[in-house]
Every structure is written in C-alpha cells, then in structure tokens.
Length: 194
Image (cartoon, rainbow, N blue to C red; front, side):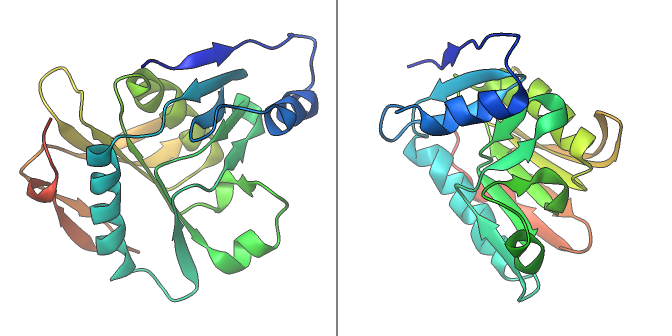
C-alpha cells in the first residue's frame, strides 16, 4: 500500500491546515503527517520497521538523562516548512515539552529517528531532513531499509539552514556511533534485513 496525499487550498493559512489535519477523521491505524504543506496518509509501519525502532529505543534508554523521554507517536511541528511530522522515535527533554502546546516544537528535539517504509522513503530522505535541519534538531538518524545499494543507516548532524552534514553512514551490519550527549554505538547487525 502506498501513501495517500490530500492537497489543501494554497490560500489556507498554516493554522487552517493544522485544524484540517486535526479535525478530519483519518483511517484508523494510519500515520497522518503534513509534509511540505500536503497531508500525507501512510499505512501503519510493518513489524520489521517497528522492530528496528524498538531496538534503537532500547539502546537509547540506557544513555539518556532521567528528564528526557523517547516517544514513538509524538507529533513535532515545523511551521516554517509546512510540516507536522510523526517520527519513528523522538528524543526530547520532558521539562521543555511540558511548556509547549499540543504539538512538540521540533526545536526542542535532541534526536529524531526515521525508519523508511517503501511508501515514505522519499520523504524520509529529502523532505524531513530539510525540515529537521531548518528546525535545528541536532541529530537525525535515517535508517533506510530501502536504500538503492542495500539497507543503510546515516547519522546527520550540524544543521545549517535546511542542510545537515553526514556524520556517519554505514551498511546494515556495521556499527554506527551517536555522539554526545548519547555517546553510544548501535549495532545495526541486530536489525532485520528485508
């Protein structure tokens, strides 16, 4: 199943677009995001996708501070890029999050993890990193199960404008290191290969 997109009127304001996104009844179990001003409805991730996210989450819990959390379904907002995203994993200080409204401002995130699905890989490779960099999220880990040369993991950092610098890129099976404040090595050999 591929992603479904719902265009909105270009005359609509950001607030109108968010209200449409919030108030519409979407198919149960689907992942609904706003990507570059377009509402995108994707099927729920498959088991292997979720297993990779769960294994990363388990490793992150061993190193994050007590006042940080890891969320799997938290919405982050990047209004300047017309985006409301639901990353596979979002690491954010809880105290900072409690001061915000119903959506987490992306600038509060310390790390975002996206695991590609066939239907959303382009967004995870292009649209989302540009939005996450624009928001100033320090680290973006892209787990690309559908990369053309085989499954890869790429860690992006040092955002400037809407561009990240590649800090590390590995094929599944090789370790990838997340710098401080995480300071861990993740064994991508634990991840299933499709």
